[in-house]
Length: 401
Image 1 (cartoon, rainbow, N blue to C red):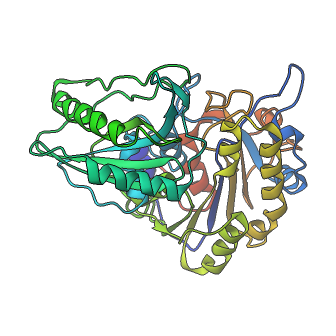
Image 2: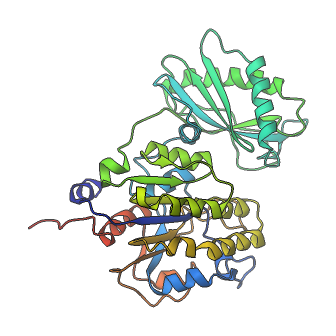
Image 3: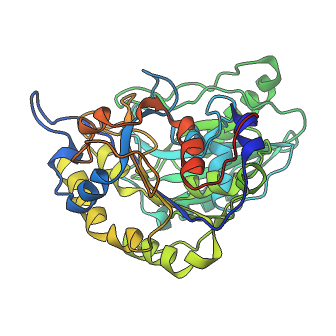
């Protein structure tokens, strides 16, 4: 499908806004209750839904719980399975850390463990960024991988950091060491192929030294490694869709996805309001705006139902700042679901609305996970959204005679 869509793309002056509320999809707190999106007071989203076409989307495949990386690739029209890459590369790209073909990039979650090594907090209390920087500096000073390899370690944000192992003949197919639960030991890094066994040996050497260096930290005395990957190139949004794109996203991982797809990166802004203001300020300079709201996902992972509701309501209050620009196509959706009841990503499909002057509106009256299934988009893979957006923007020509 990708090649067919790419061949039909034409240019015009239309404007497209993608508002992505990370982890928006939810579940009721109790049986018979309502989801976070249903509980939230969202008059602006509901009004927009009534003049839009709505539906539900599966980020990867039905029943598959997605990571943020492939889920975002799918939203932008890239096959999430073919385009999938480890989160390490995404995090590195998000902080503009140059990578070479000798590098394996890995995302670090600084975590806290007890005296027996069992994990007590997978995010070390969402470690403050300045403490993260201090811990990374301690590791730089006390760890050596010579003569086999070099390493680079850089703070990303809060409890997140990036580790790059640099050497010859390194493979990147390695299982995560994050067990995704507390009360247990971190997993051992395991090579998924022969070419990655050398990397595993080096990673174990790194972990042994690094854990000794940070053992006295009250928080962040353990590292969980995720998203091992080597860099690979992607066709840009300009190359595929002839779109000049701007990413208004604050968190490095999402900036990394945008960077890999050739989007310009707006400077990091203080909050959602200033993100929306940035779209208005640069509206004449771009065709496509990716606007990312992280807090919905963070509050879902915290298991804080009411805090997630509050974030949704804050976004709804600010929505007229975007709709007032009168884009030719306005999309509101999510990359994946993060129900507060589960404190994690889930496989549940995500709601989507698409507004344009030529969309076939349906009878959906409220923007939520239950109402949207009655919409004209039905239930579809997330990667099918982008061709529909381009069509509504008048950016696809006819297929065939």
